[in-house]
Length: 321
Ligand code: TXA
Ligand code: MG
Image (tube, rainbow, N blue to C red; front, side, top):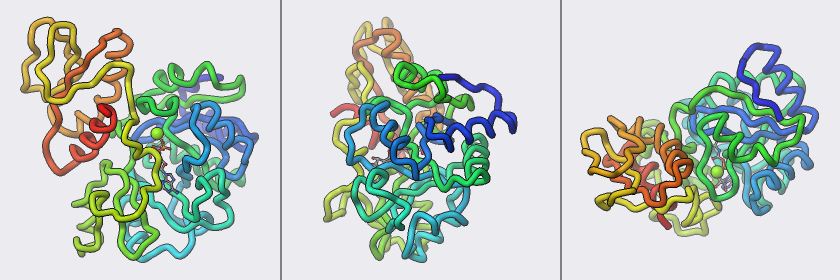
């Protein structure tokens, strides 16, 4: 495995050819780092599952460079989904849509729908464009962490999580820290109304502004069918440390809270975000730091608001379970 720290055209070309040859390429996105494979190569996709230690049956998101390629992977796309795609792609949003024959069971977990995303990170987009120029159709990429663990927000995190399991010809593209820091908003678009399956940086308010009819938008709370996204398992995204919410930290604890909240004596401050965007950007890195420092307990004072705070609190609930 090699870590590629330059994003020259020739480095991106090599990485795309590597994907075309069936190798794995981890790459930066604006949300978190993904572990990529040619989505049409069943052996390469099977390696994603083994490298992550992820049980099969968990569907993967297919990444494409533009809405122009959507029709290859998805059909019967409702008008509201097109509106969302036009508004928020490239960006931190995944749409679940009825699949075409290209999206095999190994991608969809045997379901008749497929998750599609156009990321906005310039390295991700350059890689996807080059991959498509070489004849590729889409890159399957889950977050590049071991199953159930914290998503990586830097190339070093990916190396730490998966380095031992990657092969000689696999690569990690280094694009610095992910700007958003938590995973994309997932929206189920297989019914007449959109349903948010996983909150993210694209908020319910942003979605309703595009769809204009707020009553069309359901959230997870009033979902009356089985949830199809295993990343929504009650327990997920877990560091080694025990995470406690809104509990005064004791001596020896780690602490994550808004900047204005003071750190008690004997407590290690892991992050001091000034706002909710910074909270999201620093959360996973701070949890990793706690593990590196062998801190056993981390007290997190939860963020407030109906913006990305909703997604942060969603992840915090799962971390604590
Ligand atoms: O921000 C992100 O979405 C990152 C970057 C790399 O794009 N990817 C990511 O992938 O978080 P992953 O596999 O770690 O989480 C995707 C979630 C999983 O819970 C999966 O079950 C769900 O999306 N998912 C994917 N395809 C689906 C489908 N067809 N139907 C329902 N859920 C799906
Ligand atoms: Mg994940």
